[in-house]
Image (cartoon, rainbow, N blue to C red; front, side):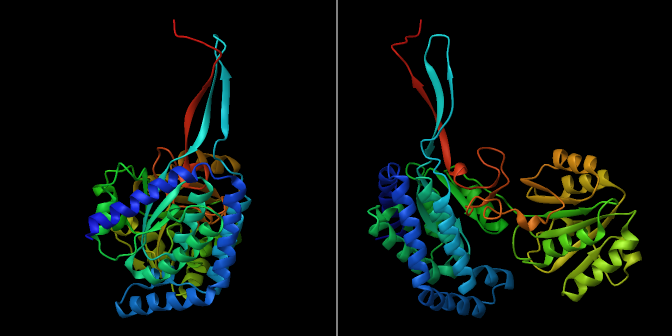
Length: 418
């Protein structure tokens, strides 16, 4: 069988499963999610063994440390995956929820009802956790999912999908509701993107190159974010100890993620007090620092920053530092160089905080909190299928509600149009 036919038949079976999945009860879906968590915990040794094959191959290929970090499964991450499954099982089921009803002058009732989108294609890089996060959210929201993970994680993903399909079967749900394109050829992705009659939505997760390739080649609607160029602005009225902790967490806690800070903006009124302590702490943590001229006058060991650096999503321990005149210059910088992903202000001034919330046009805007918190699990969504920086249909972390659409429902008693 050629690749085109292989992908088509996989998608066809998944589409058929999506029609049956729509009417599966909440209780059965929750039972299946809990079974998945139990089986994944039970098979953690197998998963770690399969994942080591992927990690070893990635190291031999010389792949980046950020990618290998996202690829790696260990006991802690497996426990987090299982916790996500159990949390999704506890969340309210959005399917067939009637969100609003109103009565028209002729007596008919008009409303909106949430329904599954149908079959969702997930195209992602070396992130085995996405395999489970995507499946859990699609299952709970009544959607079938067709997964195409990066070739770097093929052994990890295959093992995870086999476990989850067993859980589906054990709970009387069609196995093809979770379908995995388990061949490494790039052509498989291109064939997926042509199947507009079968796949209802594509969600790419990964680097900017992957997302642009998907968006440019897809015949199917795409929910996307190209990159996460995230900022923290330390205002002159910030509590500097709080600011130090937030900035350090936003950059260092896990730098290879899309919600990590890439540029720190500091109000000039407090720069001489704040920067020496903050930048020394970053240096001690191994962060490579690039700064504007004002920054370098205060802390001469910082490398000069180039304008193009402000557009970079480093996904590594590299940080741009810029001293700005005030909140207006900070917001102008974010508007020019940011990617509308995650941006934060640290301030004790209420009016400035509210201005920042209103005027910064990002998927999540924070006051006195780290950008690393822009995450479905942290927001109480159980897990996320991605963070959208689009403005249509969904924006920010996409949980269960974002994986449904609405249709109008009309309850009449014989009304006719006159």
